[in-house]
Length: 329
Ligand SMILES: [Zn+2]
Image (cartoon, rainbow, N blue to C red; front, side):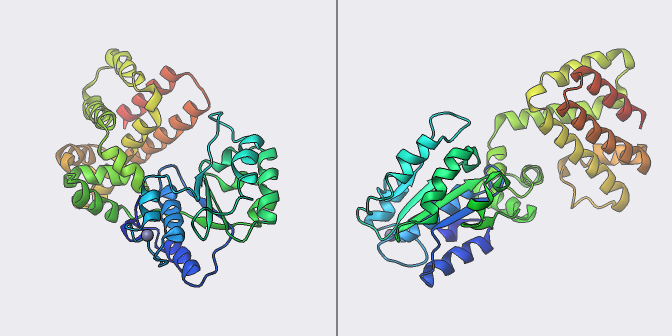
């Protein structure tokens, strides 16, 4: 568990929560809305621990009994609502773990905090059950709904919660963080930061992921030799990409970042802002060989291929067409 001060980015949300604590105006229900691994749980846990901390400040002290329990996730007044079925939070989950439990006063703390992760998985019945509690919560109750998609909540839920939207953390800050905190080399931190699109958790995960490194190496290797591939070798290239079928969106994103680098370099000749800095020679070569229109055509083809694959058009066909377009340009 991190304190607020250890969290990278999310300043507005942190300020909002700390102000609420300082002014004793904590709401009974919050929605924290943002992508997977973007820091929702970290914010919720810092908030919960601060509310329960025996020192009563706007940061968890990390030393008192409550803070130590919170760090081990066994603070009895911080409840993590679990769900049995992987894709649904049912009305029973809400009734047994929240509605029935919330009537019991906190054991030792001022508040009783409920954290519902993946709250978009609540079905309508579960949301209606939750609504009953949110409409008339006991004075000590704080309910935190963490979600990747707040649009899936009933309007009646939305209107009774304070919604906090996660914002992307700038690439440069993520990069610096990866370098200083995880000793990731500069060129690698660039790729992870660009790829994570403002999502710190995702960047950290990518930086330490063998699979991602392998995927990146495979994608770059193919891009670089595509010019030299003869048409009769195309089937082999398609087959190679199809071994990454499950990660195809990531594969495409890597290609997209590559060709954006090529385009950027062609326009500016500036090496410093490239994502794939360590591949500057290959990028330079491609920038010289391709026209602006050609690179635009490749980026469009990548986008189109991604849409087609998500619409379940035949995989091999889509990839072959894409590779041909890239070769032509
Ligand atoms: Zn404490």
